[in-house]
Image 1 (spheres, rainbow, N blue to C red):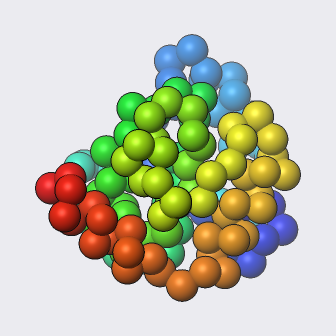
Image 2: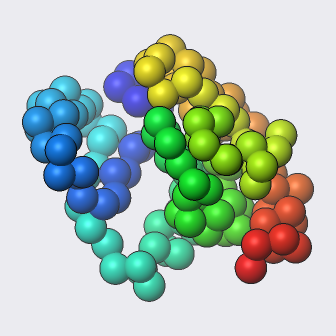
Length: 129
């Protein structure tokens, strides 16, 4: 997200085995990055409502409850197809490779430049509530 025009808000704790990676993120983050840390689950909808894009980029994801919630709130999703995400989100999400910053960046740009996916929202509300 460095040098992109959009704000990145990071929510949650770093994984216990990745604290040094989290420290590196804090050192390298540009002025458009805000690190909030953990947020009460009941407060997440207000962040989803303010966001256009939700990114959950990981090596293995079982769906990502946060992705389902964000998609239901109208966010475009940037995710990887590692795990079973394609089974849930089909062609409604923007996919990237978790080990490629270029792939991640390209997916985020495409998601920001695309209108919100009403089809994604409808798909989630019909199938996963």
